[in-house]
Length: 274
Image (cartoon, rainbow, N blue to C red; front, side, top):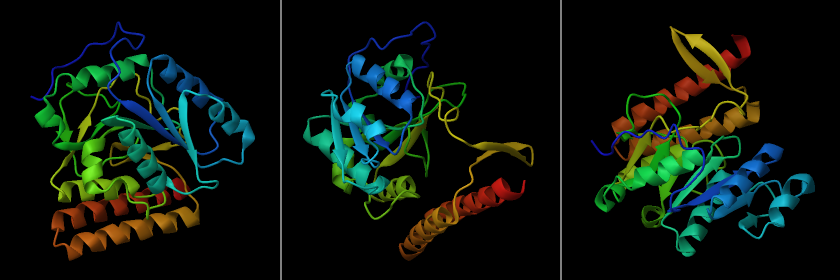
């Protein structure tokens, strides 16, 4: 057991000492994001934002003018890999040891931030240094123990910035798709782990995202319809990782990524025909 089970049902506001920064990559966000960022700032967190939609004054003006936000933009949509690498490297240069990355559509509360900070206090430094990232999510579970995984999405990831510096930050060559999977594969090859912590209170990665729920062989699968260009880019990124795993004689990586690509293609077909 790596951590005790938490009960934060009575906690509504963030009350614990801040031990990490919060980072977001945004692209034409709606007003709900600004309220969420304001809440995070009020809780005392340092906030880093990379803006991939800088020409949209309606969305960027409130963030640019906020002195509590460390704001970046490349003047265009530069992609998730570059954006994440910039956020993490800058937060590290500013003295932060960890950064919690959230999608702009991921809902959280003070209880979420408190839970993550409290969870870290249950882990020894030796255990923390084994993980390149701990991915927190709201999936129901009977406990909050760390489960080691081979692949995980970026949103909800508490990145260990000291480890990321060692492995070379995120890969800037990946635009959106497979940025997170490439990171997981590379971290493991460098001797580090990626772990998932479920049952995080008020963590909502579903409500604000236009996913469809379909039933496949009795199991629920979330699918989202993407454009043909996005699908092409995703498959290209998958194939790059799959070939890389094969060349490095990593059959487990090859199998895991091939299976993931198959599920992705099935999801795109299902979103159109089911």
